[in-house]
Image 1 (cartoon, rainbow, N blue to C red):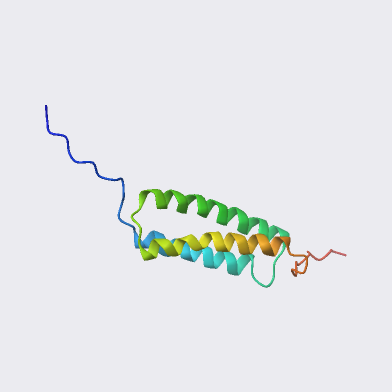
Image 2 (image 1 turned 90 degrees about the vertical axis):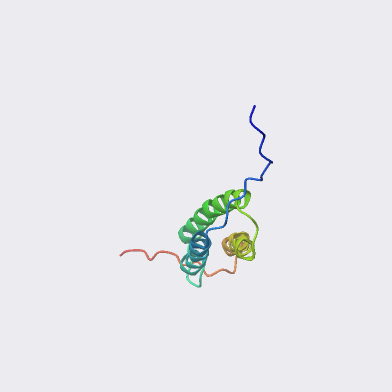
Length: 101
């Protein structure tokens, strides 16, 4: 019988390109959909995008080894909270579509 190899955790090295892409998605989503001009439609879209990204990042955490760069990706939770707050805040300037005459 062959010798049993020592147990190794299932950690992968972190790909910096994936982290950079996640940051771009967070920044662009917040800028484009949760920025100064917002609508319910834009805020809904931001919540969907950030929710999907959160799921991807959680899966990424499970497989990746921890690093400073990986910890920065946890900011997606803050972005989701900001978009949720913008959606639920009554003083938010929500742009309503203009009625056609």
